[in-house]
Length: 291
DNA sequence: AACTGTTTATCAGGTG
DNA sequence: CACCTGATAAACAGTT
Image 1: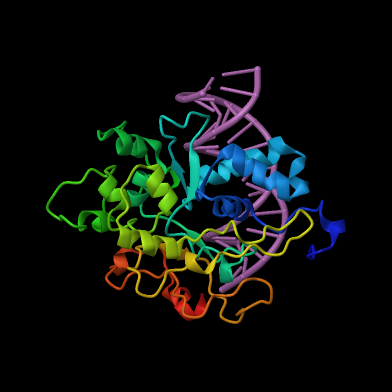
Image 2: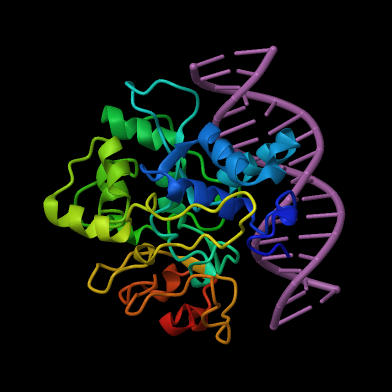
């Protein structure tokens, strides 16, 4: 295992998964979203190991972006021409990494099917911009069967329960589920007006991490998820549906690995969330003290 | 053509 | 042993 400050390890494979590396890159960006090429750049600049075999690892990374629900695509605006979309972290995956350390992912992040459809697929964003329905969304291959229809209450119950809300509508993206959870910059990018009270809340949840030191190529000092990626006390609970891998009650704070800040409240399912809405959850692993 | 994104498949390693 | 996660390969489609 490479140790921080040992340059002789600089060309070794970093102890981070592609998910971690991608999350690092995105969180390190000022906009909290990056095009694919900038994710490549970030990784190559900081980890010499990834300056070689680019075809191999970049294919893997793209696979991870598409495959993992923790990454969402943000379309470019017409005034931002370029290749591909921006990639951002799903607003509910802030506590994905154990103890805030990128070294270890605590739980698998999976979204509900309905949420997934509206969040993962580009046509939603086109609707988002153009205010009309895009092409019919397709479910992610892994979730296409088995969960149809039954996990919609979050969207349906928001604000105007009786009103039909297209699953691609902005209200369903930034409505109860995402309001205050997407980075401000992303909200702004999407042209969504951000009320002041939400703005302040979001800012406290998604701080700029640019001011934090960035590890050099030889320094695998763990990137830590900034404290405000955890939910603030008082902030409305987000309907994350994390699928815990396992609880690790004994781990606690590892020196240098970034600890849970005092008073931070981790993402747990809202109390109102019906048990049937949880996918394969093991509630013991969701206890805040364990996170 | 090169890049981007999706999907399927396979394998290795860790864990209960 | 079953299951899960992550890494890798590859085919393929769409976009720039």
